[in-house]
Length: 234
Image 1 (cartoon, rainbow, N blue to C red):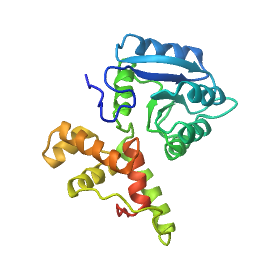
Image 2: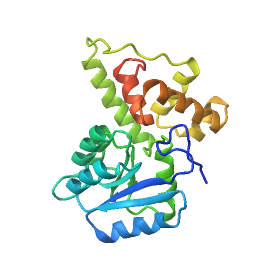
Image 3: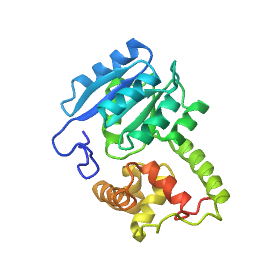
Image 4: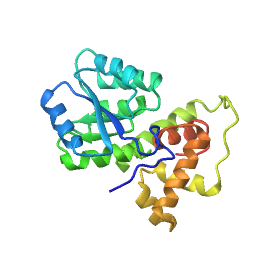
């Protein structure tokens, strides 16, 4: 079992990961709640049945992680994600989707979601997904990561004449190596194997990157690095 990374945990040592579940189907909400209820390090703090209610509860409860349906009445998961990331940036959002081919999913990631879970996922995988994003990992497969980075590279080229708003924090050569591999969609284990270092060392590098950039997730760090032309992606 993966232990939460205290350095990147907004809750601090010993406190459970606070989760808000958002889906317009009560059965799905109940299934997710049951999957998390037995975990001593995870606490379900609330449920919402649409995007509007999700925004209101996120503002009030400031959860660490949200499980968010993509398609919902009143306000979609994408719209809710965009607003929540603006008002509660420390909250990490996992999109719930029936297919990883949905175009909406791509828009959700760009809106600030940390990754996605398919609704047919094995329920025993849900707690590990929550822990993973809480540590700063991204639940995005390499194909999705490649599509995202291509889009962000295009955005970066369009903004080539825009000077950086603030001095860009300096990362070490090793931190830049780790960030380039994160941008390829690699997880900690894959990065460790590629660089011949331990997973804990990778986690430390990711933590340092996020601290220096004052960001909350790996994907945010990649987006920032592309936008500020720290990474050259073609």
